[in-house]
Amino acid sequence: MSDVNTGSSPRRHQVVVIGSGFGGLFGAKALRDADVDVTMIARTTHHLFQPLLYQVATGILSEGEIAPPTREVLSRQANATVLLGDVQSIDLEARTVTHQVLGRQSVTPYDSLLVAAGAGQSYFGNDQFAEFAPGMKSIDDALELRGRIFGAFELAENLAAKGENVDHLLTFVVVGAGPTGVEMAGQIAELAHRTLKRDFRFINTHEARVILLDAAPQVLPPFGAKLGAKTKKTLEKLGVEVQLGAMVVDVDERGLVVQDKDGTQRRIEAVTKMWAAGVQASPLSKTLAEQSGASLDRAGRIGVNPDLTLPGYPEVFVVGDMIALNNLPGVAQVAIQGAKYASREIKGRLKGKAPQEPFKYFDKGSMATISRFDAVAMVGKLRITGLIAWLMWLGVHLVYLTGFKNQVTALLHWTVTFLSNDRSERVATEQQIFARAALQRLPGGASELVSAPGSGNDRRAELEAIAAEESRLTDSGERGRVSDRTA
Image (cartoon, rainbow, N blue to C red; front, side, top):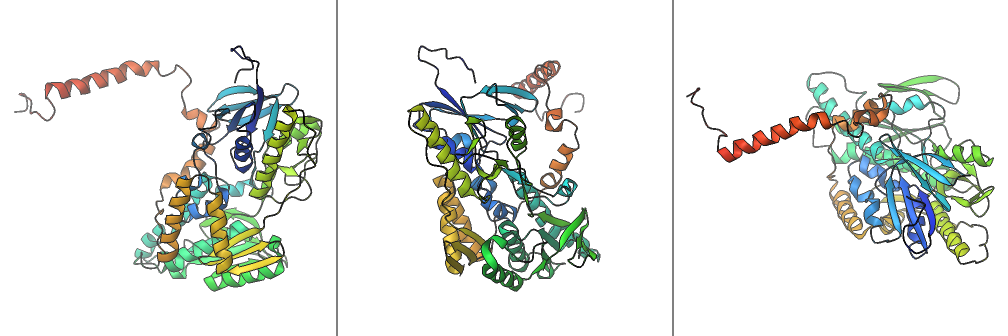
């Protein structure tokens, strides 16, 4: 984006939004009617409805239904521009954001900055675990896990047909008993015990083991002891083995090592593992902290002022999972409400209004599904379980899905899945499982697979000659004709 206005009107206030998640999208949309230019920079081209990623991983929904194109969502917002790129640095003094995509670098200036880059999976210092136990933070994660889950059943069928042992293939381990881990374990159990039970000939999917591990003493700690106990009991009825007080100390291709409370270690043989045990704020938190002197907590979240601004830089707002303020939870509503608050403050400043009161989060409650027709919900002082909680979960998630088209298709898929046990999104490919690992082995990542500008000229003549010959064969009617020499 240029910092110079080529028209006759004065340059408008430039707002840069980093991230296309809940904070970034709702922040940009809240500036729709403001006299500003909004530039959203994000590493993906879509807005991800992260709470439903586990349904992509287990074949209920397609990725498109929970990840609409950001450009489409903002297409009617005339003052919004969307740029694809991974933000590499932020210069607080120069007020610029530098991002790159496939080795191409761009610099965008700002007057106000809204940082909503979210958080990634935390392996508590053991990042090497990620190769064997993907997290659940992106579409790539969900598709890789879908490939691993359905692929494990397919491989088990092949080996069982030859009389080989397949216990390690039919053991699925979910690490972390928070909402994501609970939902994932419940859905894998439903897959094995209901959806796939008639699809194979040499394996009995009902004998598959689904293990939910957590070092904590209870399931769903933020939901309180009562709902945690209810959830554990329901999971066990589904066939999930809930192992608490169990800390993962090593992970490899074929299994993982667990240390129990008494210090003893044991190994679980399992090819398919999924990690949902912790989160780590975006590395941009560290970038901002180094320049501003703001504090960072153990999860990498940055300390911000009560008005969500960066200490010493009132033009920079940080929202969502990146911030450490008043013990706010890392949920979508914190990001949404924070982004709307920041947008109001930007508009108020441009109009010369007094600053708002400090940001105050309104807790709308927490929900988690356990299985079809069963969920837990915490709304204020109410603690709700069973079908009513599940219907509440269904309604809330449907409302917050972006786009009427996605709401309709998601509702249709839910109807089919929950009434018939069928799942339409069961495609699993080797590319889904191994492509990311292959890219990570390249020193320069995906950029090494892309030619530098202008480097394809040597190939142009060859391609033109091939096209000309294809056209000649068609026009002359020579295709399929037996030549005189071979007649």
